[in-house]
Image (cartoon, rainbow, N blue to C red):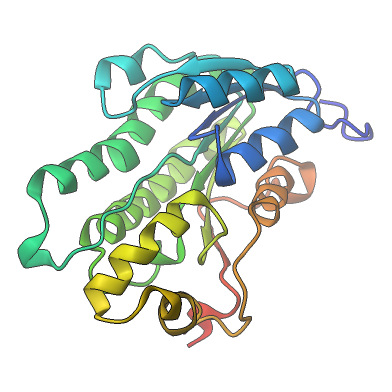
Length: 253
C-alpha cells in the first residue's frame, strides 16, 4: 500500500455489509475513494448494484440471516466492515423470540462467519483491518432494546478476541461506537420508540434520541466512515482491540 498516495488503499479489497444505505454506504464510498475495490454486500439488490456501479465496486446480494449465504461471500478481503444491522423496540416480556434470534444471527453470527472466512487471507498477506460498526449500545444499555444491546455487546467481545489472535499477523480489529446516526434504521425507530415510551412521535428525537449526548444533533454517516477509513491508515496501526465512541459525549456520563 502506498501510504504517500492520495489513494492510500490502492491494491486493497474491502468487504462492507449493509452497504446499500446509511453508515455502510458512507463507508463503501470512503474506502472506494481511497482506492479500495469494494464488495458492496446487502440484501437490497437494486441499491447495492447502483452503488457498486457508481464506485467501481462489486455488488454481492446476500441475506446475512442465512448462514449458507454468509459462507458464500468473498473471502479475499483485506478490510472488513461489519456494519449490517436491524432493530426491534419492545420490552423483554413482549419481545418476539424469533426477532431476538434474527438480530443475533445478522449482527453476531454473520460477522463471526465473515471473519472466519477472511482472516486466513489477511494472515497470508500479513495485513488486515477489521472494523466492526458497534454502537454506544455496545458500551451502554437502553430500555426496550434487549436484542440490539445484546448483539452489540457480543460484537465487542468478538472484536477484542480477534484483536488478540490477529495481532501477530499484522491485522487489527476495532469497534466504532456511534450514538444515533441519521440513517433509515434510526428513522424507522421513531414510531416504535414513541409507543414504547408513551410519548408523541414528534417528541422522540428531543426526549429520547438526543437526551444523553452532550452534542445535540444526529451524527452524519460520513463522520463514521471517515473514522473507519482512518483505522485503515498507518496512523492507526497500533490501535487494536479498541472501542472508539462517536457519541457526542453520551458515554461521558
